[in-house]
Length: 260
Image (cartoon, rainbow, N blue to C red; front, side):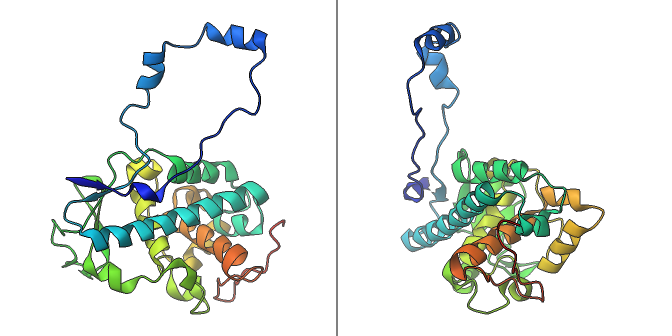
């Protein structure tokens, strides 16, 4: 049994600002498929995340909170990117030659994409919550690539997004998964249905991510999950939490004007 986490998203739809002119409307009518055909392409799609029946009401609420914060990060990163494009912060994480349109497309998919088949569960079916890698907050199922197990440690270890900058040098000192929103953003970026399945953990730390963007293999940032995370966290901290300052830390704290 699956339990929808449908209240996370109630995103508005877009409408044309004005009706089509008569000649154009007539011309397009010849290419308009029958109503049954036009409806079939989206059959089975959903905007809702789903929780496995192993998750109780409290766990479902906390998972929904984390997913909501992940989408908040993705939405703001997209908004910043649309406003400022390849500014100094974008170039820091993706390189001077990177095309911001690729990242915008990824963020569009995270925010507005089909979530059919994505499943979050709480029953540790593969016994990895306290296993080979020690006590961990969660894991991806090897045989079910769109399933994420949320372990009990998660609920104790991850503060809310608003606490991102409380510890000072957040990104350099605490990594990309300090908050619950950042942790769930990492999960979504790994899931093929949510992100397309082409991203991986190319680098880990903020220092490594910045070095990758400056080096000869800067094109790999396009597929780097942590690069996307650090960018989203960096612009959120710089724009929202500590405007104009941020909390990158590590001697590389962002002081870039957004228009650079």
